[in-house]
Image (cartoon, rainbow, N blue to C red; front, side, top):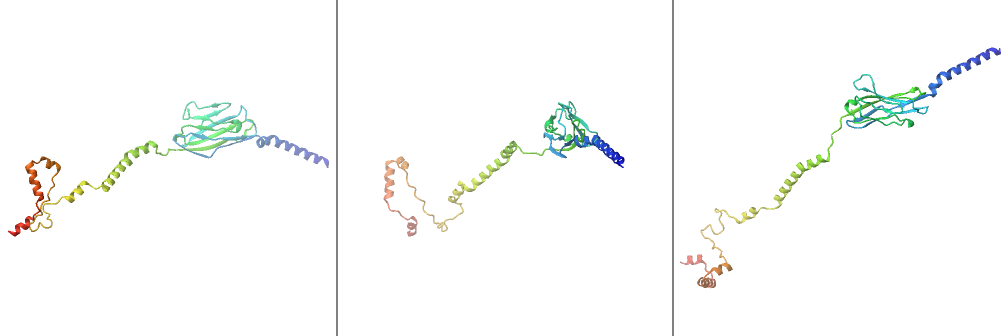
Length: 251
């Protein structure tokens, strides 16, 4: 009765060792890579393609990072960046001179920067990290980048030109109109003293004209008179005024 029990125990030990040998690496030695699902940028911007990873093993010189790109129109992915102890930037092609390594493997960073983004950069970017002996888990992650045209913006120079050619002339015209309304014209004042030839004043309807106003002699006029004229002038001043119209009516 004891032999069957001993055989069963031995079988259980064998099964346990089998599970440890074949499944322990997948449960312990694994790596996980994560990236944002979507990224949006404007034309000409510098875009950071973020990629982080976690590993049960400390990163060593055997760790590698690969970035690949698949256009939005489709097609096979193209690897344009590789890291193994140092960064290998793309020497030619679409991304030549526009990739910058931003990663720090000791901190779980495997990011890169895309300089001067263009509309042709739209597509799917894949980050792959390998850190032996961590060969299981999720070593890759994907990011969809969408680049749009940059919105038009008004610069200070444009505002200055607008003020100089539009607002300034309109302000001057407005001030001139206000000045003409508030300040009366000289002709308007002179028109009150001017009288049309057909206008008739009171007393002129019956043919009677008012005597002209006597003009007072100025100092200059007295200076230009002769002595005899000057005596006659003073005699006229001494005489009492007579009404010529009344004298005519007595005759």
